[in-house]
Length: 515
Ligand SMILES: *[C@@H]1O[C@H](CO)[C@@H](O)[C@H](O)[C@H]1NC(C)=O
Ligand SMILES: *[C@@H]1O[C@H](CO)[C@@H](O)[C@H](O)[C@H]1NC(C)=O
Image (cartoon, rainbow, N blue to C red):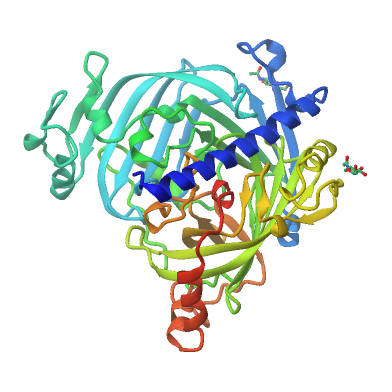
Protein backbone atom coordinates (compact mmCIF):
# COMPACT_ATOMS: atom_id res chain seq x y z
CA UNK A 1 0.00 0.00 0.00
CA UNK A 2 2.80 2.41 0.85
CA UNK A 3 4.58 4.07 -2.04
CA UNK A 4 8.12 5.19 -1.54
CA UNK A 5 8.83 8.91 -1.53
CA UNK A 6 5.45 10.39 -2.25
CA UNK A 7 3.73 8.06 0.19
CA UNK A 8 5.97 9.01 3.05
CA UNK A 9 5.64 12.63 2.24
CA UNK A 10 1.90 12.59 2.27
CA UNK A 11 1.56 10.43 5.33
CA UNK A 12 3.96 12.80 7.01
CA UNK A 13 1.84 15.71 6.00
CA UNK A 14 -1.15 13.87 7.14
CA UNK A 15 0.02 12.95 10.58
CA UNK A 16 1.04 16.53 10.87
CA UNK A 17 -2.46 17.46 9.98
CA UNK A 18 -4.00 15.12 12.47
CA UNK A 19 -1.68 16.47 15.08
CA UNK A 20 -3.05 19.85 14.19
CA UNK A 21 -6.63 18.84 14.73
CA UNK A 22 -5.71 16.89 17.83
CA UNK A 23 -3.80 19.81 19.22
CA UNK A 24 -6.69 22.12 18.55
CA UNK A 25 -9.04 19.72 20.26
CA UNK A 26 -6.78 19.42 23.28
CA UNK A 27 -6.39 23.14 23.45
CA UNK A 28 -10.13 23.63 23.29
CA UNK A 29 -10.55 20.95 25.90
CA UNK A 30 -8.36 22.89 28.29
CA UNK A 31 -9.82 26.27 27.53
CA UNK A 32 -13.34 24.95 27.47
CA UNK A 33 -13.39 23.14 30.79
CA UNK A 34 -16.13 24.08 33.12
CA UNK A 35 -18.71 23.81 30.41
CA UNK A 36 -20.84 20.71 30.40
CA UNK A 37 -19.53 20.00 26.94
CA UNK A 38 -16.54 18.03 28.03
CA UNK A 39 -17.94 16.21 30.99
CA UNK A 40 -18.05 12.67 29.76
CA UNK A 41 -19.22 9.95 32.10
CA UNK A 42 -16.35 7.65 32.90
CA UNK A 43 -17.23 4.49 34.74
CA UNK A 44 -19.92 1.97 33.89
CA UNK A 45 -23.29 3.63 33.78
CA UNK A 46 -24.59 5.08 36.95
CA UNK A 47 -28.32 5.57 37.04
CA UNK A 48 -27.66 9.26 36.69
CA UNK A 49 -25.90 8.76 33.39
CA UNK A 50 -29.19 8.15 31.62
CA UNK A 51 -29.35 11.39 29.69
CA UNK A 52 -30.35 12.16 26.20
CA UNK A 53 -29.13 14.97 24.08
CA UNK A 54 -31.74 16.67 22.10
CA UNK A 55 -31.73 19.13 19.28
CA UNK A 56 -33.92 20.70 16.70
CA UNK A 57 -32.18 19.74 13.54
CA UNK A 58 -32.17 22.61 11.10
CA UNK A 59 -30.03 21.93 8.08
CA UNK A 60 -28.66 25.07 6.51
CA UNK A 61 -31.15 24.82 3.76
CA UNK A 62 -34.55 26.46 3.73
CA UNK A 63 -36.31 23.75 1.79
CA UNK A 64 -35.57 21.02 4.29
CA UNK A 65 -36.02 23.37 7.14
CA UNK A 66 -39.68 23.76 6.42
CA UNK A 67 -40.34 20.19 5.43
CA UNK A 68 -38.59 18.38 8.20
CA UNK A 69 -38.62 19.93 11.58
CA UNK A 70 -37.16 17.15 13.60
CA UNK A 71 -36.32 16.72 17.24
CA UNK A 72 -33.55 14.18 17.80
CA UNK A 73 -32.64 12.42 21.02
CA UNK A 74 -29.89 9.92 21.77
CA UNK A 75 -29.96 8.04 25.06
CA UNK A 76 -26.88 6.79 26.84
CA UNK A 77 -26.93 3.86 27.27
CA UNK A 78 -28.93 3.12 24.12
CA UNK A 79 -31.87 0.73 23.86
CA UNK A 80 -30.82 -1.86 21.30
CA UNK A 81 -33.74 -4.29 21.55
CA UNK A 82 -35.44 -5.08 18.29
CA UNK A 83 -34.56 -5.64 14.66
CA UNK A 84 -32.55 -3.09 12.68
CA UNK A 85 -32.29 -3.17 8.90
CA UNK A 86 -30.44 -1.57 5.99
CA UNK A 87 -32.39 1.07 4.10
CA UNK A 88 -30.37 0.70 0.89
CA UNK A 89 -27.66 -1.41 -0.69
CA UNK A 90 -24.62 -0.59 1.46
CA UNK A 91 -21.11 -0.13 0.14
CA UNK A 92 -18.14 -1.02 2.35
CA UNK A 93 -14.51 -0.25 1.51
CA UNK A 94 -13.15 -2.76 -0.98
CA UNK A 95 -15.79 -2.32 -2.33
CA UNK A 96 -18.15 -4.84 -0.75
CA UNK A 97 -21.91 -4.64 -1.29
CA UNK A 98 -24.25 -5.84 1.41
CA UNK A 99 -27.53 -5.57 3.27
CA UNK A 100 -27.84 -6.18 7.02
CA UNK A 101 -30.55 -7.24 9.42
CA UNK A 102 -29.48 -7.27 13.09
CA UNK A 103 -31.71 -8.44 15.92
CA UNK A 104 -30.92 -7.68 19.58
CA UNK A 105 -32.72 -9.52 22.35
CA UNK A 106 -33.32 -8.24 25.89
CA UNK A 107 -30.99 -10.95 27.24
CA UNK A 108 -28.10 -9.30 25.30
CA UNK A 109 -27.95 -12.02 22.67
CA UNK A 110 -27.89 -10.86 19.09
CA UNK A 111 -28.24 -12.38 15.66
CA UNK A 112 -26.72 -10.48 12.77
CA UNK A 113 -27.64 -11.44 9.24
CA UNK A 114 -25.35 -10.07 6.52
CA UNK A 115 -26.09 -10.62 2.84
CA UNK A 116 -23.25 -10.03 0.39
CA UNK A 117 -23.69 -9.27 -3.32
CA UNK A 118 -21.59 -9.11 -6.45
CA UNK A 119 -23.10 -5.81 -7.64
CA UNK A 120 -23.61 -2.28 -6.35
CA UNK A 121 -27.42 -2.49 -6.57
CA UNK A 122 -27.61 -5.65 -4.40
CA UNK A 123 -29.43 -7.59 -7.11
CA UNK A 124 -27.15 -10.62 -7.27
CA UNK A 125 -26.69 -12.30 -3.87
CA UNK A 126 -23.39 -14.07 -3.41
CA UNK A 127 -23.49 -15.43 0.15
CA UNK A 128 -25.07 -14.72 3.53
CA UNK A 129 -23.51 -14.85 6.99
CA UNK A 130 -25.47 -15.66 10.12
CA UNK A 131 -23.68 -14.34 13.18
CA UNK A 132 -24.71 -15.17 16.74
CA UNK A 133 -23.25 -13.69 19.86
CA UNK A 134 -23.65 -11.55 22.94
CA UNK A 135 -23.14 -7.83 23.41
CA UNK A 136 -22.46 -5.96 26.63
CA UNK A 137 -22.66 -2.18 26.83
CA UNK A 138 -19.70 -0.80 28.78
CA UNK A 139 -19.55 2.95 29.14
CA UNK A 140 -20.02 6.26 27.41
CA UNK A 141 -17.15 6.73 24.98
CA UNK A 142 -14.42 9.18 25.91
CA UNK A 143 -13.25 9.39 22.36
CA UNK A 144 -16.48 9.60 20.42
CA UNK A 145 -18.87 11.78 22.40
CA UNK A 146 -22.43 10.56 22.22
CA UNK A 147 -21.42 6.95 21.59
CA UNK A 148 -21.45 3.99 23.96
CA UNK A 149 -18.62 1.48 24.01
CA UNK A 150 -19.55 -2.17 23.96
CA UNK A 151 -17.96 -5.59 24.09
CA UNK A 152 -19.13 -8.50 22.07
CA UNK A 153 -18.58 -12.19 22.10
CA UNK A 154 -19.21 -14.36 19.04
CA UNK A 155 -20.65 -17.82 19.57
CA UNK A 156 -21.29 -18.90 16.01
CA UNK A 157 -20.84 -17.76 12.41
CA UNK A 158 -22.40 -19.73 9.57
CA UNK A 159 -22.46 -19.23 5.82
CA UNK A 160 -24.94 -19.94 3.05
CA UNK A 161 -23.57 -19.69 -0.49
CA UNK A 162 -26.17 -18.68 -3.06
CA UNK A 163 -24.68 -19.83 -6.37
CA UNK A 164 -21.93 -21.92 -7.89
CA UNK A 165 -20.26 -18.76 -9.17
CA UNK A 166 -20.24 -17.38 -5.63
CA UNK A 167 -18.71 -20.62 -4.39
CA UNK A 168 -15.93 -20.29 -6.97
CA UNK A 169 -15.17 -16.72 -5.89
CA UNK A 170 -15.08 -17.75 -2.24
CA UNK A 171 -12.75 -20.64 -3.03
CA UNK A 172 -10.09 -18.14 -4.01
CA UNK A 173 -10.33 -16.41 -0.62
CA UNK A 174 -11.03 -19.14 1.91
CA UNK A 175 -8.71 -21.89 3.12
CA UNK A 176 -9.74 -25.21 1.56
CA UNK A 177 -11.28 -26.40 4.81
CA UNK A 178 -13.01 -24.32 7.44
CA UNK A 179 -14.92 -25.62 10.46
CA UNK A 180 -17.46 -28.12 9.16
CA UNK A 181 -16.97 -26.79 5.67
CA UNK A 182 -14.99 -28.25 2.85
CA UNK A 183 -15.49 -25.76 0.05
CA UNK A 184 -15.30 -28.36 -2.69
CA UNK A 185 -18.41 -30.04 -1.35
CA UNK A 186 -20.45 -26.93 -0.59
CA UNK A 187 -23.97 -26.99 -1.99
CA UNK A 188 -25.62 -23.63 -2.71
CA UNK A 189 -28.51 -22.94 -0.34
CA UNK A 190 -27.18 -25.09 2.52
CA UNK A 191 -25.95 -23.72 5.82
CA UNK A 192 -22.34 -24.41 6.90
CA UNK A 193 -20.56 -23.40 10.07
CA UNK A 194 -17.56 -21.13 9.56
CA UNK A 195 -16.75 -20.47 13.17
CA UNK A 196 -17.72 -21.64 16.63
CA UNK A 197 -16.24 -21.09 20.08
CA UNK A 198 -14.05 -24.19 19.79
CA UNK A 199 -12.49 -23.23 16.48
CA UNK A 200 -10.04 -20.58 15.34
CA UNK A 201 -10.85 -17.49 13.32
CA UNK A 202 -8.79 -18.32 10.25
CA UNK A 203 -11.78 -18.59 7.96
CA UNK A 204 -13.36 -15.39 9.25
CA UNK A 205 -10.20 -13.39 8.74
CA UNK A 206 -9.77 -14.75 5.22
CA UNK A 207 -13.20 -13.26 4.51
CA UNK A 208 -12.19 -9.94 6.06
CA UNK A 209 -14.96 -10.57 8.56
CA UNK A 210 -15.19 -9.19 12.06
CA UNK A 211 -17.89 -7.69 14.22
CA UNK A 212 -15.62 -4.92 15.55
CA UNK A 213 -18.44 -2.59 14.50
CA UNK A 214 -20.23 -3.70 17.69
CA UNK A 215 -17.56 -1.86 19.69
CA UNK A 216 -19.28 1.52 19.28
CA UNK A 217 -23.05 1.99 19.37
CA UNK A 218 -25.45 4.92 19.27
CA UNK A 219 -29.21 5.02 18.82
CA UNK A 220 -30.86 8.21 17.59
CA UNK A 221 -34.58 8.78 17.75
CA UNK A 222 -36.06 11.41 15.46
CA UNK A 223 -39.46 12.83 16.29
CA UNK A 224 -40.92 14.43 13.19
CA UNK A 225 -43.29 17.37 13.41
CA UNK A 226 -46.03 15.38 11.67
CA UNK A 227 -45.94 12.82 14.45
CA UNK A 228 -43.78 10.07 12.98
CA UNK A 229 -40.79 8.57 14.73
CA UNK A 230 -37.65 7.12 13.15
CA UNK A 231 -35.00 5.20 15.09
CA UNK A 232 -31.50 4.66 13.78
CA UNK A 233 -28.73 2.40 15.03
CA UNK A 234 -25.19 3.61 14.42
CA UNK A 235 -22.46 0.99 14.71
CA UNK A 236 -18.69 1.48 14.45
CA UNK A 237 -17.05 2.27 11.11
CA UNK A 238 -15.13 -0.23 8.99
CA UNK A 239 -11.46 0.59 8.34
CA UNK A 240 -10.89 1.62 4.73
CA UNK A 241 -7.66 -0.42 4.60
CA UNK A 242 -8.52 -4.09 4.16
CA UNK A 243 -5.51 -5.26 6.17
CA UNK A 244 -6.65 -3.23 9.21
CA UNK A 245 -10.32 -4.01 9.30
CA UNK A 246 -10.38 -7.05 11.56
CA UNK A 247 -8.36 -5.29 14.30
CA UNK A 248 -9.58 -1.71 14.01
CA UNK A 249 -11.40 -0.28 17.01
CA UNK A 250 -13.93 2.12 15.52
CA UNK A 251 -14.14 5.80 16.52
CA UNK A 252 -16.64 6.81 13.84
CA UNK A 253 -19.83 5.25 12.46
CA UNK A 254 -21.08 3.38 9.43
CA UNK A 255 -24.28 4.41 7.75
CA UNK A 256 -27.04 3.65 10.26
CA UNK A 257 -29.53 0.80 10.24
CA UNK A 258 -33.16 1.69 10.91
CA UNK A 259 -35.52 0.09 13.36
CA UNK A 260 -37.84 -2.33 11.58
CA UNK A 261 -40.80 -0.82 13.47
CA UNK A 262 -39.75 2.82 13.24
CA UNK A 263 -38.21 3.57 9.86
CA UNK A 264 -38.65 6.13 7.14
CA UNK A 265 -41.71 5.72 4.92
CA UNK A 266 -41.94 4.41 2.36
CA UNK A 267 -38.97 2.03 2.61
CA UNK A 268 -39.35 -0.92 0.24
CA UNK A 269 -35.78 -2.00 1.00
CA UNK A 270 -36.49 -2.12 4.76
CA UNK A 271 -39.37 -4.53 4.16
CA UNK A 272 -37.33 -6.76 1.85
CA UNK A 273 -34.41 -6.92 4.27
CA UNK A 274 -36.68 -7.48 7.26
CA UNK A 275 -38.40 -10.43 5.60
CA UNK A 276 -35.17 -12.01 4.37
CA UNK A 277 -33.52 -15.11 5.79
CA UNK A 278 -30.21 -16.85 5.25
CA UNK A 279 -31.93 -19.02 2.63
CA UNK A 280 -33.76 -16.14 0.99
CA UNK A 281 -31.48 -13.12 0.72
CA UNK A 282 -33.21 -9.89 -0.25
CA UNK A 283 -32.92 -9.09 -3.95
CA UNK A 284 -33.21 -5.33 -4.21
CA UNK A 285 -35.04 -3.72 -7.10
CA UNK A 286 -32.80 -2.04 -9.63
CA UNK A 287 -32.89 1.70 -9.06
CA UNK A 288 -33.95 3.50 -12.21
CA UNK A 289 -31.09 5.13 -14.06
CA UNK A 290 -30.93 8.66 -12.77
CA UNK A 291 -29.59 11.46 -14.90
CA UNK A 292 -28.75 14.16 -12.45
CA UNK A 293 -26.45 17.07 -12.48
CA UNK A 294 -24.03 17.78 -9.68
CA UNK A 295 -24.91 21.46 -10.10
CA UNK A 296 -26.52 23.20 -7.14
CA UNK A 297 -26.19 23.21 -3.39
CA UNK A 298 -25.92 20.04 -1.31
CA UNK A 299 -26.01 19.83 2.49
CA UNK A 300 -25.54 17.24 5.22
CA UNK A 301 -28.69 15.53 6.41
CA UNK A 302 -27.48 15.42 9.98
CA UNK A 303 -24.64 16.23 12.33
CA UNK A 304 -21.88 13.91 11.07
CA UNK A 305 -19.35 12.12 13.26
CA UNK A 306 -15.89 11.38 11.87
CA UNK A 307 -13.26 9.04 13.24
CA UNK A 308 -10.86 10.98 15.50
CA UNK A 309 -13.36 13.23 17.20
CA UNK A 310 -14.78 15.44 14.56
CA UNK A 311 -18.37 16.57 14.48
CA UNK A 312 -19.32 18.56 11.46
CA UNK A 313 -21.82 19.45 8.78
CA UNK A 314 -20.94 19.90 5.12
CA UNK A 315 -22.43 22.34 2.65
CA UNK A 316 -21.25 22.13 -0.97
CA UNK A 317 -22.03 24.13 -4.07
CA UNK A 318 -21.03 22.91 -7.52
CA UNK A 319 -21.05 24.93 -10.72
CA UNK A 320 -20.67 22.48 -13.62
CA UNK A 321 -20.31 25.26 -16.21
CA UNK A 322 -17.27 26.73 -14.47
CA UNK A 323 -16.05 23.40 -13.04
CA UNK A 324 -15.97 25.28 -9.76
CA UNK A 325 -16.93 24.18 -6.27
CA UNK A 326 -17.13 25.57 -2.78
CA UNK A 327 -17.40 23.56 0.43
CA UNK A 328 -18.32 24.87 3.86
CA UNK A 329 -17.30 22.64 6.77
CA UNK A 330 -18.89 23.69 10.04
CA UNK A 331 -17.15 22.09 13.00
CA UNK A 332 -18.65 21.49 16.42
CA UNK A 333 -17.50 20.14 19.73
CA UNK A 334 -20.60 18.00 20.40
CA UNK A 335 -22.44 15.18 18.64
CA UNK A 336 -25.58 17.29 18.30
CA UNK A 337 -23.67 19.99 16.35
CA UNK A 338 -24.96 22.68 18.69
CA UNK A 339 -21.61 24.12 19.91
CA UNK A 340 -19.72 25.57 16.93
CA UNK A 341 -15.92 25.69 17.13
CA UNK A 342 -14.74 26.79 13.71
CA UNK A 343 -15.87 26.92 10.09
CA UNK A 344 -13.79 26.33 6.98
CA UNK A 345 -14.78 27.57 3.55
CA UNK A 346 -12.79 25.88 0.79
CA UNK A 347 -13.04 26.39 -2.93
CA UNK A 348 -11.39 25.35 -6.16
CA UNK A 349 -12.05 23.43 -9.33
CA UNK A 350 -12.99 19.91 -10.28
CA UNK A 351 -13.00 17.65 -13.29
CA UNK A 352 -15.21 14.65 -13.89
CA UNK A 353 -13.49 11.53 -15.11
CA UNK A 354 -14.77 8.12 -16.15
CA UNK A 355 -17.56 6.00 -14.73
CA UNK A 356 -16.13 4.00 -11.82
CA UNK A 357 -15.00 0.54 -12.91
CA UNK A 358 -15.59 -0.72 -9.36
CA UNK A 359 -18.99 0.71 -8.47
CA UNK A 360 -21.54 0.93 -11.24
CA UNK A 361 -23.44 4.20 -11.25
CA UNK A 362 -20.57 6.06 -9.57
CA UNK A 363 -18.12 8.44 -11.27
CA UNK A 364 -14.50 9.37 -10.74
CA UNK A 365 -13.54 12.99 -10.11
CA UNK A 366 -10.44 15.02 -9.44
CA UNK A 367 -10.73 17.92 -7.02
CA UNK A 368 -8.44 20.86 -6.42
CA UNK A 369 -8.54 23.09 -3.38
CA UNK A 370 -7.00 26.46 -4.10
CA UNK A 371 -8.49 28.69 -1.43
CA UNK A 372 -9.49 28.17 2.19
CA UNK A 373 -11.02 30.67 4.58
CA UNK A 374 -11.58 30.04 8.26
CA UNK A 375 -13.79 31.55 10.93
CA UNK A 376 -13.30 30.97 14.64
CA UNK A 377 -16.77 30.41 16.08
CA UNK A 378 -15.80 30.54 19.73
CA UNK A 379 -13.41 32.41 21.99
CA UNK A 380 -11.13 29.37 22.60
CA UNK A 381 -10.58 28.77 18.87
CA UNK A 382 -10.03 32.49 18.24
CA UNK A 383 -7.45 32.66 21.04
CA UNK A 384 -5.69 29.57 19.78
CA UNK A 385 -5.46 30.84 16.20
CA UNK A 386 -4.44 34.26 17.46
CA UNK A 387 -1.41 32.73 19.15
CA UNK A 388 0.02 31.20 15.96
CA UNK A 389 3.29 32.55 14.55
CA UNK A 390 3.08 35.20 11.80
CA UNK A 391 2.91 33.63 8.34
CA UNK A 392 1.62 30.29 9.62
CA UNK A 393 -2.12 30.82 9.75
CA UNK A 394 -3.72 33.82 8.13
CA UNK A 395 -3.13 37.32 9.47
CA UNK A 396 -1.29 36.96 12.79
CA UNK A 397 -3.07 38.50 15.78
CA UNK A 398 -5.99 39.21 13.50
CA UNK A 399 -8.36 36.52 14.73
CA UNK A 400 -11.71 37.53 16.21
CA UNK A 401 -14.76 35.40 16.89
CA UNK A 402 -17.06 35.36 13.87
CA UNK A 403 -14.66 37.18 11.52
CA UNK A 404 -13.54 35.19 8.50
CA UNK A 405 -9.85 35.11 7.51
CA UNK A 406 -8.30 33.98 4.24
CA UNK A 407 -5.67 31.27 4.79
CA UNK A 408 -4.54 31.30 1.16
CA UNK A 409 -1.77 33.92 1.57
CA UNK A 410 -0.11 31.71 4.19
CA UNK A 411 -0.61 28.55 2.05
CA UNK A 412 -2.97 27.17 4.64
CA UNK A 413 -2.77 26.99 8.41
CA UNK A 414 -0.27 24.85 10.26
CA UNK A 415 -2.23 24.46 13.48
CA UNK A 416 -5.34 23.37 11.54
CA UNK A 417 -3.23 21.08 9.37
CA UNK A 418 -4.31 22.87 6.20
CA UNK A 419 -1.80 23.00 3.38
CA UNK A 420 -2.55 24.68 0.05
CA UNK A 421 -2.91 23.98 -2.75
CA UNK A 422 -4.18 20.41 -2.64
CA UNK A 423 -5.53 17.75 -5.01
CA UNK A 424 -7.71 14.68 -4.45
CA UNK A 425 -8.99 11.71 -6.38
CA UNK A 426 -12.67 11.28 -5.68
CA UNK A 427 -15.62 8.98 -6.16
CA UNK A 428 -19.15 10.43 -6.47
CA UNK A 429 -22.54 8.86 -6.82
CA UNK A 430 -26.07 10.28 -7.03
CA UNK A 431 -29.12 8.24 -6.04
CA UNK A 432 -32.78 9.04 -5.42
CA UNK A 433 -34.12 8.62 -1.89
CA UNK A 434 -37.52 7.23 -0.89
CA UNK A 435 -39.18 10.56 -1.77
CA UNK A 436 -37.37 10.65 -5.12
CA UNK A 437 -35.13 13.46 -3.92
CA UNK A 438 -31.52 13.21 -5.09
CA UNK A 439 -28.81 12.14 -2.64
CA UNK A 440 -25.14 12.84 -3.26
CA UNK A 441 -22.59 10.31 -2.01
CA UNK A 442 -18.98 11.51 -1.79
CA UNK A 443 -16.06 9.13 -1.22
CA UNK A 444 -15.22 8.06 2.33
CA UNK A 445 -11.98 9.55 3.72
CA UNK A 446 -9.24 6.99 4.41
CA UNK A 447 -9.57 5.95 8.05
CA UNK A 448 -5.86 6.44 8.72
CA UNK A 449 -6.29 10.08 7.79
CA UNK A 450 -4.10 9.90 4.71
CA UNK A 451 -5.04 11.76 1.58
CA UNK A 452 -6.51 10.19 -1.57
CA UNK A 453 -3.89 12.19 -3.46
CA UNK A 454 -3.16 9.46 -6.00
CA UNK A 455 -5.51 7.48 -8.25
CA UNK A 456 -4.63 4.29 -6.35
CA UNK A 457 -5.96 5.82 -3.17
CA UNK A 458 -9.30 6.77 -4.61
CA UNK A 459 -12.10 5.85 -2.18
CA UNK A 460 -14.15 2.66 -2.74
CA UNK A 461 -16.95 3.55 -0.31
CA UNK A 462 -18.97 6.60 0.63
CA UNK A 463 -19.66 9.12 3.36
CA UNK A 464 -23.17 9.89 4.58
CA UNK A 465 -25.26 11.17 1.66
CA UNK A 466 -25.99 14.87 1.24
CA UNK A 467 -29.31 16.28 0.07
CA UNK A 468 -29.89 18.75 -2.74
CA UNK A 469 -31.47 21.91 -1.46
CA UNK A 470 -31.38 24.36 -4.30
CA UNK A 471 -30.18 25.02 -7.78
CA UNK A 472 -30.39 21.45 -8.98
CA UNK A 473 -32.94 19.92 -11.25
CA UNK A 474 -34.25 16.41 -10.98
CA UNK A 475 -35.37 16.22 -14.59
CA UNK A 476 -33.55 13.83 -16.78
CA UNK A 477 -33.47 16.67 -19.26
CA UNK A 478 -30.24 18.19 -20.33
CA UNK A 479 -27.22 16.32 -19.27
CA UNK A 480 -26.58 13.22 -17.27
CA UNK A 481 -24.44 13.27 -14.15
CA UNK A 482 -22.27 10.63 -15.71
CA UNK A 483 -21.79 12.22 -19.04
CA UNK A 484 -21.89 15.96 -18.64
CA UNK A 485 -18.29 16.86 -18.10
CA UNK A 486 -17.15 14.15 -20.42
CA UNK A 487 -19.28 15.64 -23.17
CA UNK A 488 -17.96 19.08 -22.43
CA UNK A 489 -14.44 17.82 -22.52
CA UNK A 490 -15.00 16.20 -25.87
CA UNK A 491 -16.59 19.31 -27.31
CA UNK A 492 -13.28 21.04 -27.81
CA UNK A 493 -13.22 24.37 -26.05
CA UNK A 494 -13.51 22.80 -22.63
CA UNK A 495 -10.79 20.29 -23.22
CA UNK A 496 -7.84 22.50 -22.54
CA UNK A 497 -8.75 23.75 -19.07
CA UNK A 498 -9.66 20.27 -18.03
CA UNK A 499 -6.35 18.84 -19.13
CA UNK A 500 -4.47 21.64 -17.49
CA UNK A 501 -6.39 20.94 -14.35
CA UNK A 502 -5.60 17.25 -14.40
CA UNK A 503 -1.99 17.51 -15.39
CA UNK A 504 -0.79 20.59 -13.61
CA UNK A 505 -3.09 20.61 -10.66
CA UNK A 506 -0.40 19.02 -8.59
CA UNK A 507 0.03 19.43 -4.89
CA UNK A 508 -3.28 20.60 -3.38
CA UNK A 509 -4.73 19.38 -0.14
CA UNK A 510 -3.61 17.56 2.92
CA UNK A 511 -6.39 18.62 5.14
CA UNK A 512 -9.42 18.24 3.00
CA UNK A 513 -8.56 14.61 3.03
CA UNK A 514 -9.53 14.48 6.63
CA UNK A 515 -12.98 15.62 5.85
C1 LIG B 1 -33.97 7.13 30.74
O1 LIG B 1 -34.84 8.17 31.08
C2 LIG B 1 -36.00 8.24 30.29
C3 LIG B 1 -36.79 9.49 30.67
O2 LIG B 1 -36.34 10.05 31.85
C4 LIG B 1 -36.83 6.96 30.46
O3 LIG B 1 -38.00 7.00 29.69
C5 LIG B 1 -35.97 5.78 30.08
O4 LIG B 1 -36.67 4.60 30.29
C6 LIG B 1 -34.67 5.78 30.86
N1 LIG B 1 -33.81 4.73 30.33
C7 LIG B 1 -33.16 3.89 31.12
C8 LIG B 1 -32.31 2.90 30.44
O5 LIG B 1 -33.22 3.94 32.34
C1 LIG C 1 -5.93 38.74 18.98
O1 LIG C 1 -4.81 39.57 19.20
C2 LIG C 1 -5.08 40.96 19.05
C3 LIG C 1 -3.77 41.71 19.21
O2 LIG C 1 -3.08 41.29 20.35
C4 LIG C 1 -6.14 41.40 20.04
O3 LIG C 1 -6.46 42.77 19.82
C5 LIG C 1 -7.39 40.55 19.82
O4 LIG C 1 -8.37 40.88 20.80
C6 LIG C 1 -7.03 39.08 19.95
N1 LIG C 1 -8.23 38.30 19.68
C7 LIG C 1 -8.68 37.39 20.54
C8 LIG C 1 -9.92 36.65 20.13
O5 LIG C 1 -8.15 37.14 21.59
